[in-house]
Image (tube, rainbow, N blue to C red):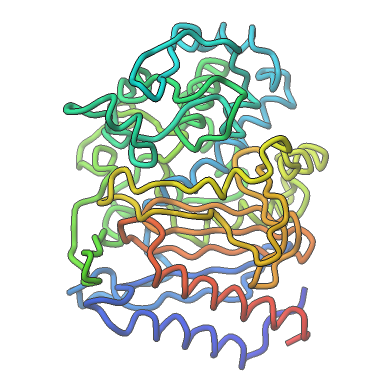
Length: 413
């Protein structure tokens, strides 16, 4: 597609800068990058400061913990292995051989009791969040089961994932949780490579990406955006990074758990090149390397959970309010069509911003958001570092930016 007009770019930059003007109760800093299917940046702008109270400006080279935006990357990697026959989407026997721990997991009931699994888990269930796993910060039942010690999904220790029970029977409901971490275990065991090594070798290096990893080197740590917590009164306070262990100086790459669900740190400009590859049917528009078949990309954007058409409207509670706000609807659309989920991300059927039906999108806990609209040939990412999740001010900025992008695309400006 053609580039955005100078006026549109200026207006979007003003939107971003205005959102970051109030360092005490606005957005301290953000990076926004939007690309077309050729991998060309339609807009790339950083606004505000590296952190509240900082004099350093946020820049396009700033690095963010992207949390659950990692899931799309690991889904991409798993589908590469499905193409090669090294992972199988619907073969429970094969998954059990790679992850025998799955067979012994019990299912947590509402009364706190544990029962046996009635169904077997498949990779497709893991990638579509129907295997039965949850997150303690989104599920009160799971949170209370581990009380008072608790499970910490961001401890950097695999045991916090391996010991969690299921919260529903496999295949019988949609529940957002540690499913993609288990997919990462399967990938590591199938390839005999660490998850970070695999995605570096088979995704990031072929795309020429140098600033996205599960183990930030000193230069990336030096560019790390500061993490914040928004108090109930709306004010901001700086806090430590939730995924702390990979950031400790001297920490070796094999000294912490490589989280398939939340482990990556990235410069947004690098992440969007993966989105551009999806826009371009699995081929990098920049390096021209083919990473996935077109048919595989199509499958990733197909609704995998047609029997749960209203999964995102169940509401997600703020089981740990320091980490998330309550979420009544994962992506509200006024006309309320059926909701969909592909292989690791939500599919939106239209929406107020102008995106096309079947657009893939998802988010990361510290209010990072991405979308990938194959029909319109546009994808983008908005990154901040603010907890709890679903911050109203970040959501407002993201919707405003995306709306302006689509308005310009539709009008040819």
